[in-house]
Image 1 (cartoon, helix red, strand yellow):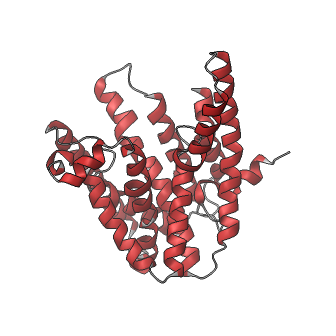
Image 2 (cartoon, helix red, strand yellow):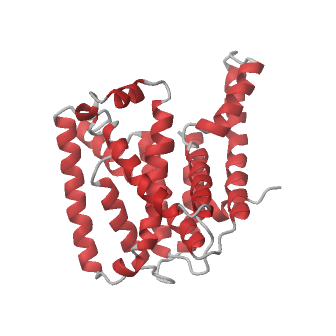
Length: 309
């Protein structure tokens, strides 16, 4: 029998650390509910504006947070030369495989119930989704995270981690061109071809979202000595101002019609960085009740929520 707690010990790509950051754990469970909100569309029966805010604007912080905090801890371990790549990867694969079996069985049951089961195509689709697109629509996180871990580990082995981190910023800029600012960039030939390709969503997730936010962990480590000296009130003011700028940016790109989607925005990146800096500056050990359980709870919410929708 597989232990659920054992499976989730390292969920969301997070290395186990001796002193848990309880504020990060609290943010994990908040972001797990954000991912849930994207899929259940709260506010839809109230108004279009409520739907946009509750289902599309606020929750967009969730998945980038998970990539960034995973990147922070994994890259931290590499920089401190204490990374255990094999153990880390095994945790991801065990967790991913466990939930993949559940969702593949779910899809199999549904196809049998609807008389649409075709053995060869089902097997091929299951293998393809496991390794590339994710065994279910929300599990794309795992292939993407594994891809980021592999690339960052290779870059570190070659002594190119710093350059890979700066390259990730270029990828983010390109990501803006195929999302929020597509209307301004669509005349660039390769941008237009990229958006029109059938693999647009996969490419956007794997390169422009996943790698960019995972490698944000490098900059969080690089700037640690700087932001650790910043007062909390200044951090909070920064979060408020960046949130206002983020909302303003979303309003402008949607109102002007230049956005294909506002999944990636210019101010999302610095907003997320400052939020994580604040969390890292305030570990709150022993001050948040049941914080040690939040990692397991957030993992369960993230992995299982489609079963209950």
